[in-house]
Structures are given as C-alpha cells and as structure tokens.
Length: 408
Image (cartoon, rainbow, N blue to C red; front, side, top):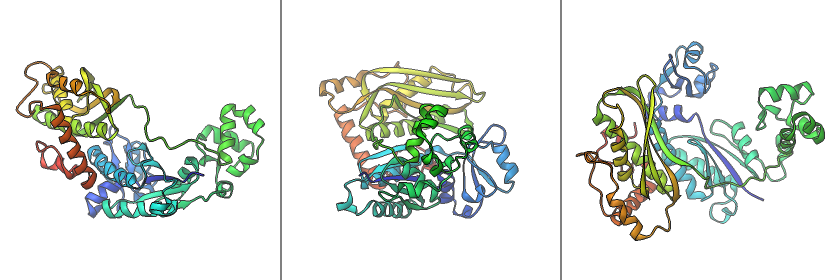
C-alpha cells in the first residue's frame, strides 16, 4: 500500500506578494495582467470572497472587487520561492513529481522509520514550509494520487486531510460528482440528468451503462468513483525542453537591460538542467516585441551543456539576430532542448565546448570568456550546493542588479 501526499501552496502568487509586502495582509490581492489585456493569475482568499478566481479577465475582477489590490506577475520571484519549497519536499522523499510551480505529489512509502507516518511527514513539511518561507501549503494524504489530490483541495487553505487505507468509499461517496477528474460542465449535466449527483451515486451505477453513455471515459469515471488509481509518482518526465521566460511590466528598450535579463534567465535554466541531471544541445531565444510580434532564434552546439555562462553567451549571440534594441521588447525567454542525461560524458567530449561560441562580437564586457570545462562543472556544483542549503537566492550572478538578486 502506497503513502502519497499531494501538496498545494495556497493562493501561491498572491501569498508571495503578501509575504514581500506585509501591509497587504488581510486585503484582497489579485495578481495578473492589466485591465486591457490581462487575466487573473491568482487571487488571495479575501479576493475570492468577491467571486474573483484565476483565469478570469482582469476587467471582470475589477468590477467584482473594485477595492482589490491589483499587482503584476513577478514570475522570477515565484520561481525562486517554488524552488525553495520543492527543496524542502526533497528532504523528506526523493520521489517528488512536480505538477506545476506550486503543486506536487510525493511518495513517502517506506519513510516511516525516518519521519513517522505519512500524516506526520505532511505535518513536518507544512511546518518547515511555513517556518522557512512564511507560506502555507495544503496537504492531502492517501493511498493513491487521485485521493490525495481531492483531499488537499477539500482542506484549503492551510489544511491537512487524511484518507486512511480502506477509507476511500467513506471519503468519496458524499462528494459531488464535479469533484472527479474529468467531470466538466457537460459531463456533470449529463450525469445529473440521470440522477447521479454524488460520487457514491456514480459508484453504484452500472459500469456497462456508463460505458454505453460515455464510452471509455465512463469506465474511467467508474474506476475513480471506487477510489482506484494505480499511477505511480513519476520523478522524471521526459521533457523536450527546459526554459524560462519573463513578461515585463515596462517594455525593455536598452540592450544593457536585456543582457541582464538574459543573464538571469540563463542562470535559472541552467540550474533546472543540473537539478534534473540533464544537458541540452540547442539553445533557443524567444523575443516578443511591444506590438506582440514574436520571433525565435536558435543555435545547436556540438556538445550538450548545462552551464549558465554557455547558455547566456549563446543567447547574447542570438539577440544580435533580432530587432531588440531598435524595437521595444515586452518578453524574453530562453529554452534548451535536444536533452540528454548529464552522466556519462567523456572528458574529451566535454573539452570541445571551448570553441563553440557564435560569431565575433557576441562576447561583450558583460560576458566572461569560457573557462576550462572541468573547473566550470566544479563551480556549478558548488553553486548548486549553496543554493540547496540557502535557497535560490543564496548565490546569484553578481552582474544582476540588486533588486534582481533578491528575486523581486
């Protein structure tokens, strides 16, 4: 029998904003785009009382909550806090499956001798997250992923709900069918027409009838209604690329500012690559101008890399192939693809990285010359150890401005 946790940070973006600006505590905080073209990315629980929710147009949110405090998205700050929280998760189990920047499954089966029961592990994680970050996380504890996810949703905010082994039916039966994965508005209405209002009603329905009405989806819903979910926690998903992008509150016009942003993006991407134990050969730069015209430029290296300096120099070189600097820029992004496992590279292969950098002029005073690959890897490992101990802000490129170093 597995012991699975589902952990979900409460109103994550809005909570980080309140954490950084304590004067906002208790107020309706709404994070998202501007009124003309934006949508709500997150809303504090105070704002939700007015009917505001994520994915709602910002203009609608302002009508519902005219006294709300509307703030722009600061994705780099949220990514920094997410990295800190996920590092806490990995102290308790190596089996962590990220679902998004603020949500994850953990398999803590067999951790009892170290940390106690699954419920105790959840409590310890919640306490550590609160103490070390100031954020709250809701937890669901159950024998499988499906039950754990529903449990964490029911306990929000700052909740802990446990579904004990053998307790699936008692937990599920009273809940409305809309709580099931895959039950949207259309399916819900079809079920209600057949008198199926709760998950218990669905469980007691004929599997054959559900299959005739909804096809394979009906059979799947019948399985879920019985609390059946055999999916393991997957720590490694086959990703095609690893990347980060930022949309800016004010369009970037100066190439110096763009270089600093690229340095920050390259640093975050390289950190994720190393944490995932992978390297990539293709570096892609994404540029979106002020008028929403978007271009991408890419370069493929002869050898894969996970080094931030290498990725940064490639991005700078690619920037020269765009109109950035003559046209205002509202978004920059860097991604690395053609991924391979980092382990097993031969020393002679790694040494070839020294001669891979673009055309003359790509290396500027802001971009240091390439260093010996072995020294570079030792330096990167040291940086990763510091960040593991002190969080993502424990060490950052010195060329970043002070506010960027704080992740603000």
